[in-house]
Figure 1 (cartoon, rainbow, N blue to C red):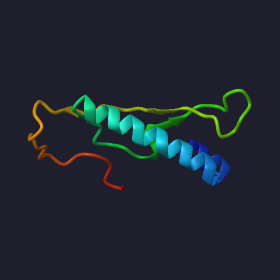
Figure 2 (spheres, rainbow, N blue to C red):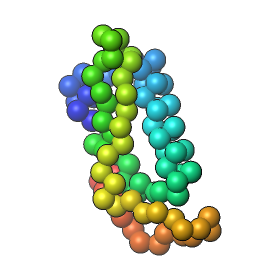
Figure 3 (cartoon, rainbow, N blue to C red):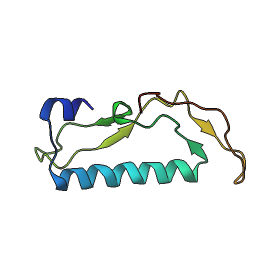
Length: 86
């Protein structure tokens, strides 16, 4: 969120790389049976450029305060949570 607030835009190439990292992180969480439950721009941290290359940034998902761990593949979560504005 801070990056977009400061820069107002992001190149398509960088956006693809960022999105791919987010998708990979969510796939890993799914493998572990973890549901984040509050994924939004403010809960995604983007690192500074790596080796001076703007598109080479790493993504970290944060704020797992509402996260739940599923104990079976058919378990369903029923309580509402997250950020109302989203």
